[in-house]
Image 1 (cartoon, rainbow, N blue to C red):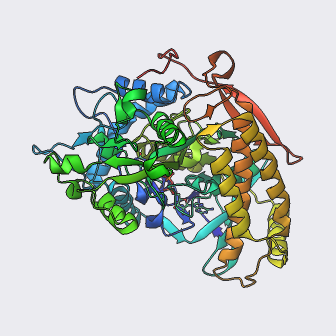
Image 2 (cartoon, protein in one colour):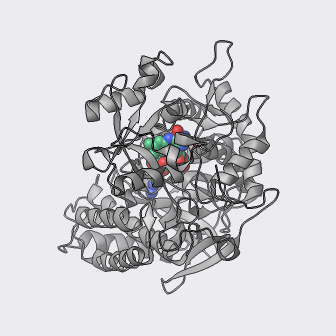
Image 3 (cartoon, rainbow, N blue to C red):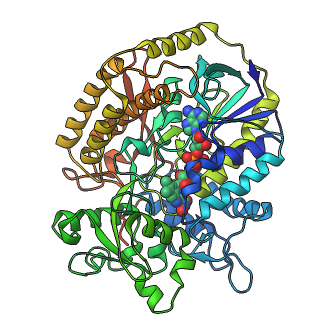
Length: 561
Ligand SMILES: Cc1cc2nc3c(=O)[nH]c(=O)nc-3n(C[C@H](O)[C@H](O)[C@H](O)COP(=O)(O)OP(=O)(O)OC[C@H]3O[C@@H](n4cnc5c(N)ncnc54)[C@H](O)[C@@H]3O)c2cc1C
């Protein structure tokens, strides 16, 4: 049986940053479903928001973040985040991260949506890739043990205390039990709940679903971010920083339509607003050639000599060429909104504590909450770094002060039997079919625009799909590299999370940030300035509760730009 002081689940930015820190206090292992450098963090293009210019201030970063969140973010947590973000950036710099610099050698910075100062640091449009590899080098240098292609399938807890983990080792086809004093969930988002998403195929929300089953609460799950500009057809991301550098959004009349909606901020309004504007243009028949997309134009920046666009956006240039046959220095890009980020997640504080002793969460799978109802572009990579580091310290110290918990053998046996019975199934339902049906439903009915009818319809269909799960057949009966089994387990997580997202959206009868109800288009602070919490009762039913928003300095105001 494997045994460590601390186990970190996830090899993205949050997991690796935490592991490096925790290893200063304890014997640490990092488990990852995929090889760490394949984590979704590596797909991040834009960059990260930090206050490093003397004309900028953490108060201004905090104001932008809280206003962007539509006042649902916890202000004490946002203050910690904004104050610690610069050091998190310098840490990377000292590890050898190569980011863009100005002529005089300072870190270069640019605008992102909803920001009042150009505070986004970047490495071309390959920011996530660069950070991921820098952290991986540090991880290899540390004494952290890395287990690749180890998929956690169960968090063992009793009486709200962590006991250990159960893992499917893909290469050897075995279910392992991993003992540890403490574990950190850093498993990223659940983008695969939706048909149109910028997220990787591996982003199936495992950590959130497993944490819920283990007794943790999920917070604010109804808030799903849709990114305004993803490439039509593939939904690969087209970074917000193209608009940060002056890109235009155009409808079928060639009009910069944002001037009708938010003339002060234009294309650099927050993501929830720009997504809704694009969707309205499409709905009102001003999509290009009657299709579900508008144009993003950066060619004028190249032609006017403002930027060498191929050098400024090497990744987007290649993506546009390979996936749409477009030369962005000459042609306009077809773009449409798609799911991008989960503001909700495992309820956690700024030190990653979840309310379950010895069980921590950080990164996109956690809800601290600094993004509230809408995250600003450039605030997530730095979220994973700031709270990855803090949680790494707190989990390391926790392990140094606590003893190894005793394992409950009965729970382990039950889980082994559950997996064995899934493997035995020969039902007629198929994982890919149900997954596609679920994703199509979620994009259609729980997307950018929602109402009572679409949400009720989605909820009842999700519950029908849930009832079909026991009839899903597992065709691959072998032990080793069984992606059929893994795909089924991921489907369970997707269905469970879809139900929670939809239930939260149905209950929240107001519009706030990314959650827009056509039947309740106004924000309603008297009733809804509160977080949604969902937990699992003993009988398997979901329980909804609420928690007040922490408000320190910034009184909720109308969100005009
Ligand atoms: C295309 C794209 C572009 C983005 N661009 C930006 C940007 O420019 N700026 C910004 O601030 N944010 C950006 N974001 C958001 C940001 O990249 C993510 O929120 C952040 O990187 C998440 O980091 P993470 O460590 O929490 O998760 P991830 O990087 O997703 O890592 C999750 C890890 O968990 C592991 N895992 C998952 N399930 C299991 C399991 N069951 N068992 C074991 N391991 C498991 C995976 O193997 C993986 O290693 C972007 C996101 C996308 C999708």
